[in-house]
Length: 256
Image (tube, rainbow, N blue to C red; front, side, top):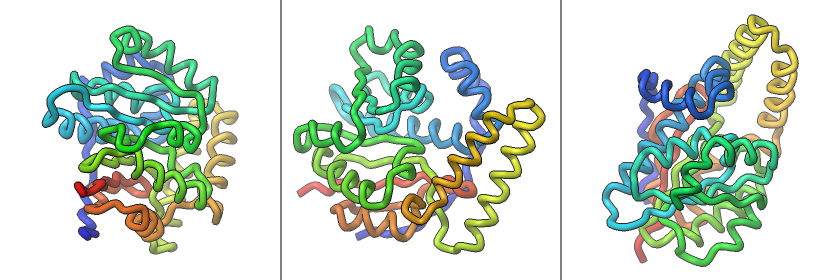
């Protein structure tokens, strides 16, 4: 099993990417760039990596996206390759409804569909070996540890042999002191940006959410995440990029 740790710090995205996403996603994207630039980079990288895989496959490349939210990562995926088709899963109706409005053209082209189920329900409804990739950003860390373990088992089941796992997310460093320092830097940026914008309502929301992320039954430590993926059957587990608390992980369902 390849358990390499190949960590590269990500670079900022270019203006073309910004222009495309600002035009479709609008205020959500522009605000996210200010609050957490690394999150925007992760969505971009998830799309780029998935697109590179899709380019090597003839015919449709079926992607399961967990936690589509308002559509930022969804759009990155759809824009990455012409043969990508996405099933976007999100159990939060308000966010998913926004994604449906933002991305209606892609639905009309037959390249995007939605599920309003929670992740496990949606996964359990899918046949074995029915998707080419599971691509996600900032969803798995929201799951309690046991739910996450079960979700990884289901993700492995629904991937075809040779299928890909890619997740840009909050992967906490195993070094607790270093992770705490990274989290403090992140919080400081929340305060700086949102107080300047006079958005104390959003500041309150993000701080409360962060307490949930950092709670013992939610926090996604890197070593534990690797162990859960390996236990599910994944190989070639790798941290491809890291920026503070944010990291891009890839893995493979091996060909049997």
